[in-house]
Each structure stands twice: as C-alpha cells, then as structure tokens.
Length: 150
Image (cartoon, rainbow, N blue to C red; front, side):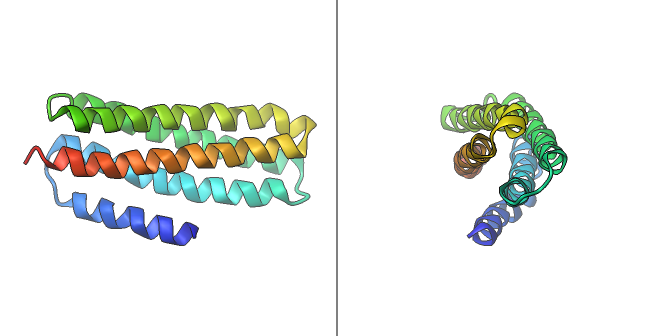
C-alpha cells in the first residue's frame, strides 16, 4: 500500500516538475518531502512496533519530525509564491500545512509517550501517519488547483 501511495504521489510530482513557476516548484518540493516523510513514518512504525530499544524508536521519531519540518518549510514557501494564484490553490496549501502541523504534534507526543507506553507511542505515530496522508491529499489537490493559473 505504501509503495502505491509513493508511486501515486510521484506521478503528480513528475507532472509538475516541468513547470517553471515558483508556486508549482514549491508545491512539488512539498510533494517530494511528503513522500520521503511517509516512508520514514512507515519505517518508524516498524521500528517502534518491534521490541526495539527506546533509543532506536526515539531516533526514528526524531527523523520524522525533521522531515515534517522540511514539508512545513516547503508549504510556507508555496503559500508565499502561490498567494495570488487562486483561492482554491491557497486553501489547499493552507489545509496541507495544517495537516502537517497536526502530524508534527502527534509525532512529537511520541517522543514522550515512547518512554512510558509502547501502545501510546505506536498510536501517536499512526495518528501522525494519518495526518500525513491527509496532507498528501491536499498537496495533490494543490497541484491541480495551482496549475489552473496557467
């Protein structure tokens, strides 16, 4: 399933890649980062689900937070560059950014929860993955909406 999501996301990234517009370049960068982050979250679920050490789980969670920060940065640039494109484009970027923020909150909670409860830790990471999936949907929608500028 994850491979399908990655391939689906890459299809849209490649579709946007030829655009020379800063707006679409930033949306593309966010799409690439979302795919990378999704792969990292999937790895983290496996690491933290196993009887891995707390340090291994925490390290993987930290990598997810770092990747989510990159997505947020790309979406912030996209919001700036796409500001005057159309309201649907801007709304999709805003909604993607909110979902990334929700994912960051959920995964940041895992940092603490992984020290005390494997179940809470796992739940936090899974919720982060769900929010990331929502962000991906909004980024795909943004690609479509922001292309209408042309």
